Image (cartoon, rainbow, N blue to C red; front, side, top):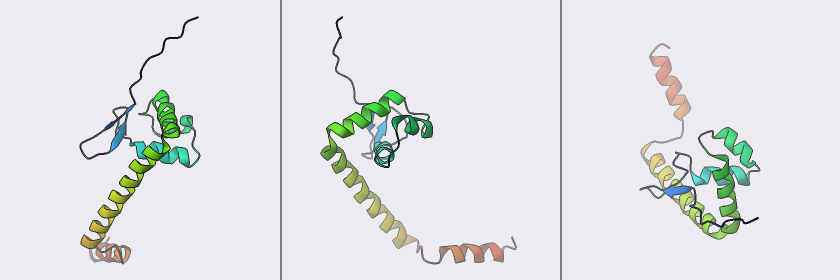
Amino acid sequence: MTIATATEVIPFQVDADGVARVGGTRVTLDTVIAAFLHGATAEEIAQQYPSLNLADIYYLIGYYLRRPSEVEAYLGKRRAQAEVVRKQNESRFDPQGIRSRLLARRASRGQ
C-alpha cells in the first residue's frame, strides 16, 4: 500500500484587518483555539459553529499544537488590539451607570 504525501493548505485566511478566519467563514482562529483551550473537543466546536468543517477544526488544533508560540503571539496581539478598542469605546461612552441610564430612558418613554 502506498500513501501519497501532499502539502495541505492551512484552513484559515487573514483578512484586511489582520484577523485569521477559518475556512472562508466569519469564525476566527481565536474562537476555535479559545474553545479548545477551555476543553472543547473538535466535535463540540463543530456543533457550536456549524459553518466550520470538522476536518478544518482538527487541522487548526494540530497547527496550534505544533506552533504554540506563533499562535500565542498572534492571540496576544489580538488581545492587545481588543484592549485598545475597549478603552476607546469606554472613553467615548462611559460604561458606569449605563443600566440605570437605560432604565431611566425607558421609564421616561412610559414603557
